[in-house]
Image (tube, rainbow, N blue to C red):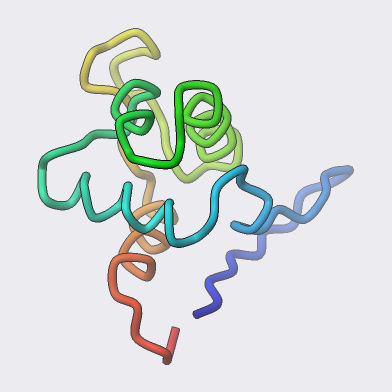
Length: 102
């Protein structure tokens, strides 16, 4: 499966999902956990996923926020964590459904 979102930004390296410090499979586990309601997009919530840990969870959430896939409508310290933007919802839906057409 290949999911790529291309956005033109001046003086910025093209970002790909493979730039995250976790594999697509691990990220897909986080996405499924959030979709089931057993996880949420916070550093602590992502760190609960096996194979991530707190430091990589911080990096994953920070990358997703800085690239516009997540945002904090109630502030970074709110216990509900971040929520997906429209392009985040598209990416996470594609990760949740591993059909080969994506």
